[in-house]
Length: 432
Image 1: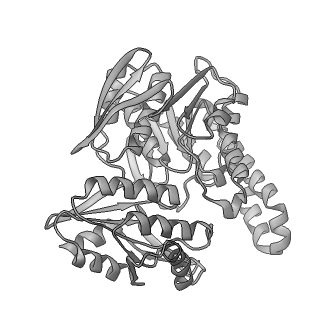
Image 2 (image 1 turned 90 degrees about the horizontal axis):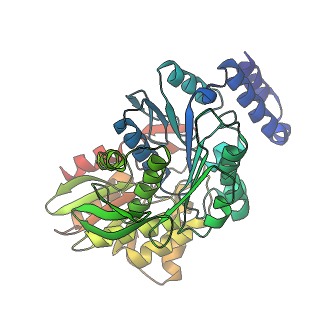
């Protein structure tokens, strides 16, 4: 099998040489995987969702509304994999699956009678040919902020990598009776770039501007707002938290509209989602204190998260977090600065250090607190003890938020060792 041959080659070729030919290796894996599984994407309506934040939630929302409309679907996200209603956690540690895993899964979806597949598309997945061979029909852009710069080096390269999803929509062969659709967050500064790619249908969405706008936003227990489009108004009430989820709901609404689904069915499909695992998920409440987990990793994501926590909290916002190792180091002081300004108190702790020294990661986050001359933090390296200390100091009306790990069921320690970890269950045990 070509996959085995290529993997053997990877082990025997010297690292420096392999790094130089790595794109060829990735490409050959992608081609061979699609050939073996007979390019299954051609038999499906393929929807790709890309951006820095909100991808997993948007994928879940699209999947829900399509199923509510009576369609059989497949879904691949950072959080989960779903095949014709059968769901399992994504345990691969990848947003975009491997070059043989993806076509194999898509072929199973075709066999199961799926009409649609919704794929969360990461920029690194694109440049490593993980989505090669999938002829996308709908591309959705959520937003862009600094991330994965250890791979892409510049924001322009990062943006252009995501743009390849939209290029795929514009140049891949059109399927009979299927419309090519370009859906873009009009509030994002890169909206013009993504909107410029050719498509049969262009839709923009946003809170400030766009074809499809979210208005009269309120968070009173439930998140509620109106969708204004083409002179009509549609009321949405969701169990999701936060204004940023209005954008995710709008993006999914656009997909439903592009597929000719009745707005009432779209509404029902969107409102079915009660929460997305590890995405601003309320996991416990005890003695008047609410506990949330999230998958935030960028300064922008932390800013949005803390902003929403401050709206929910009647008292203090207490944060417990660190940062993953072997990632973009430049963002760490910025995350520290955001926490220093927006959280009332922060406990810095270990996240997933991979091959880096945990204490050095924390020291880099700490620079953000020192920059703004705030001492509203302490360091507790043991993550369980850090959460327990946050619970101890919390008073009724406070919110404890633990970002970074989110839905993951493991933590990577030392680069090769994975330890079992379920943040939601750990918090529940700590608070009783």
